[in-house]
Image (cartoon, rainbow over the protein chains, first blue to last red):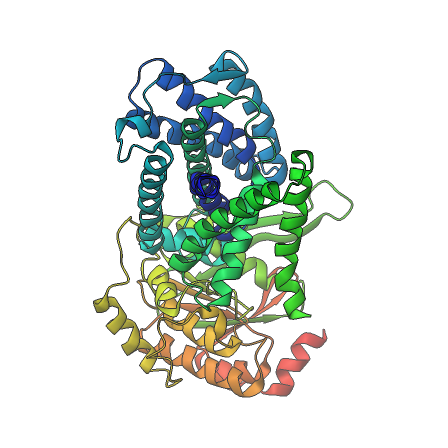
Length: 286
Length: 250
């Protein structure tokens, strides 16, 4: 059972990243793969910050801001320098590998005996349960904040930017600035996933972000299928769907491992699984 | 008063396709006047609208709205004075937002988009009242996504949305060209009604000679980047359809 609890916990930890992908992909219509780099950046900043004695609570905004800045770079390269969105993300992701290594100082940094956000609020004797409740609390907070933001006038302009750029510009919105902010927000959230996962697994690793973008994409797709299935397309249900999607994703991976599939084939399974959920909506149409 | 002064614009400069469309072009739009603009393809109608809206910029010359020089301002900055209706009936609204949210965005066209919720019940009542005026039965569907409506409904709402906030100029780029004849009639009547009622300054590009006869105070005919004809009042009303077709002939 605790095996699946860990899977759910990881799903929650990764759901901030999934919300980030939801914002860049679904709201702004930009395929942003800065994610691999900004997730690791969040983890790296967290490990270094905790190691140097900064409190876990204060480390949270630090990780967010680090990811936000990374996203702003992608946004500026994409809008001001007019570089293709995918390439902008690859450029920043590549650059971040060096940055992350420089910040971390080595390729792996364990958090042995360091205070984490989870040791700061020990709800239960069982560490996994403490981690579960606390991560759930933060994700709920993030969800609430993003949902409220999307309902404000600023949020409306954000959502319309990805949907109809001509219209928002005619409504007096600087769509370029909006995209830069959106990519900042998306990658800030991604870095928060790095913050949670680093503290859950107890270390930061320079390679922890490799291929992580697929998790976010898969979660967003599952969320989309769920929201469509219950015919609730409002922004709140879509956001909740993404979080549930992230958890389902992890449970399926855990299940694959329990039935004895070799860990070597894990990425292959992830790819096939995402392929299946991406093509489900198209099958229905046909 | 909106003015294009001594405008020059060359497309594809320094290439074999170089095309000097405007050379020392002038146009003055008088407040409260509804101007129609016709002309063959490539005569510069759309360029005039784009120059006014700020999606393209002149090589030389000046664009003013009232006492403000807006020549260097981009489209989203000029939206403070200028509202636009596009040819594509879906282009003026966002399909992913509800009717109410679309109206909210349009209602704050000239203001900054703050981090506060503007789609209040009070705002909803204002929108309902506006939509009620259309008689399309949409007033109780303000939470419906815009994407679920037809092109005609969306273009009608776009017109209402444009007038939710103050403006100095309304630009209409063939607003009914993509609609069926009946819807097209309804939308044109609505546009004319709004322009009259709110005493708006408007400029519309059209290819419909019927619309030229039925609407507007002033008629401009563009030919190769020059104003070939400029008729107002009685002179405009007296133009026959045959004459209009002849203008295009040579």
